[in-house]
Image 1 (cartoon, helix red, strand yellow):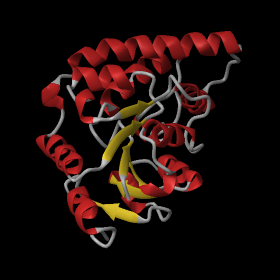
Image 2 (cartoon, one colour; image 1 turned 90 degrees about the vertical axis):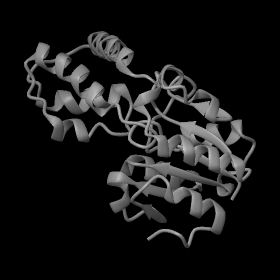
Image 3 (cartoon, helix red, strand yellow; image 1 turned 90 degrees about the horizontal axis):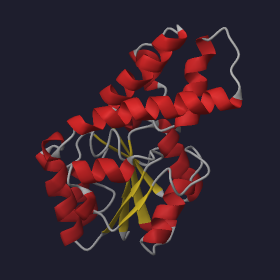
Image 4 (tube, one colour; image 1 turned 180 degrees about the vertical axis):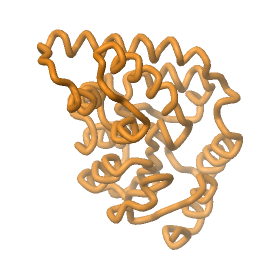
Length: 217
């Protein structure tokens, strides 16, 4: 193995609360019930697919243009909330682990469906930790399609079979499997049957990198 590709939200940091607040504002405007259980279903999926999940409880009909406007409106709310992020948002263990992986010679990339990935990495000062970023701006299909990970592997000049993918969502694990990557589940995805490795803590990646895939449950 020569590389690690990381999902962003839920793996390197958590902006779940910011997404929740932004989608809640849109749902409230439409009079749609929206809670954290529904919000959990939005993990790892695109903005457009997230809106379709929210609209399952909507009685009205919306045109494609209206849906696009709502997606843009949500994103504007979300971008406003991103101003609350800074370098202290990231746990020290994340920075230390990324530094360790790079010191071991691994190539590192981010593979996220979010179109705000680069902004988030800059605000949290994580942008210098990665060799490449593949995000919602350079893909046409969201997870569980593997496109975002395939692009990330291409950007760091590696074959998928040479890369671990670290994911917290089942859709991301499915995307990694579909692309021929080695999927590592963390957080909610540590219970995903398709994850080949399951970890409880980000720092476990150091030993996996150093000693191989036997160092996880």
